[in-house]
Length: 306
Ligand code: PLP
Ligand code: CA
Image (cartoon, rainbow, N blue to C red):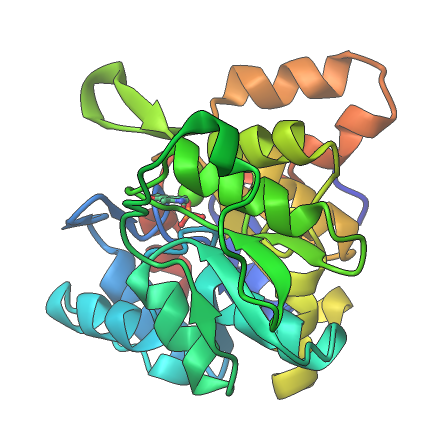
């Protein structure tokens, strides 16, 4: 039965959709939790999906935690999740550098301690994590000491981001054989009450502007996140559902990888945003129109309990 895009999932259509997939990918913030609070019913949905024999994975653009840290957070919030089921950009970025780029050499890291840990876990050394306290005169900044073994600049979320880091990244990226990789391009991190703070995309764009080069990103909507899951667990895209709260990252990832897509309205994007993409008539924007939407993933519960 052909269903028009962006239809509300309810009643029998939930069971119909779940029967058509073997695997469900969940975005994290805005889908299973908001900040430090679990979305009501999310833990039960995950538990019941697994009990019904579905593979369940978590794909997050947030590079500030290792897989282990995510597994710990999930356990605290009452989710039944194992470390190997979590694909965060800190981990995926390390895997990308190792398996796709086959990087030999160090990383200049503009990022978090979690990124350092995931790089080291795959045998990649880094320099740069933490504040960059170099002083000196402006005339000397273009000659800051560089580590000759650095062969990649990697940008993720970095609360110590500074002019000096930007400068050092530029000096490394002036070397044409230096790879340039970013975790993700989310420009804003929304907070409760309509507030927001700058996301990794702002830092990445600053480095791109300085270096006059464009980075390769690994996070959503780039297909690499899905490739990473699929290569480890043999997932058939046609029988996989991507659940997310953001049209430009989560739903676009699903479209890029030919997955079924479900927007949940507990996070960033609204139904009006999705409808605006749909009505725009713009081919590129159709990738941001989900197949289905729900108010919350708790709407999946009746079909799983029945
Ligand atoms: N990046 C950072 C630094 C974040 O804090 C967040 C959300 O908390 C995100 C990205 C978006 O994460 P997700 O892909 O789970 O929505
Ligand atoms: Ca999200």
